[in-house]
Image (cartoon, rainbow, N blue to C red; front, side, top):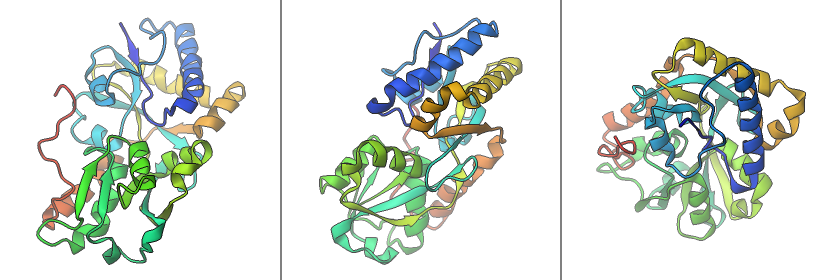
Length: 277
């Protein structure tokens, strides 16, 4: 059995578009003689557990995982370029959001608020907040509480439901939500934008031979340059891929390292492991 999964940005409202993307990719792989092609996208297995599968053909993961705890199990195929506010080339950024009634005007105003984080190994959900508050921590803490929501959407729901005060959401998710579920943003405001970093990469298993990786790259490039797929591109905000080295993702580890060296441990989960690790 072969597996493919596009768990990033695969909102239920976009399943048809994501399925169409995979159909275009799998058709070209079939034409090229690729002999392990999933019939469809896997949506039931945890996105970290997918990375562990020896039959993984193509997926997407956080660059923080690819350069960190997942570097020995997956390899980069390509970095997507998105057409969303805050993106440039293959770079993206996060928007640190706060609830509108709070009237936050500076970082110190965030002290003692309730922070929602999608998951421990998320660059976009963790590192922008680390970078903001690490210089101001007291005894390794800054917020009154930190909750793990499980996803960016869940963090937005927490903000909308007055269950959290601050969260960091990547700008691609923000734009897709603005287009498809704008009510989740109604009670939020963008407090600050993070620096650019490489977008979540497409990956395959680390054992995949170079010639197959090159084929996946050619197919992705072809699909994203095919006018017949323009509707899919527009819905998913995808416009191209770039081939960048894994070293470009090292900036994500630097942010964590700097915060820990400063003694800020509140947003660190040292015992957290990838699923099935």
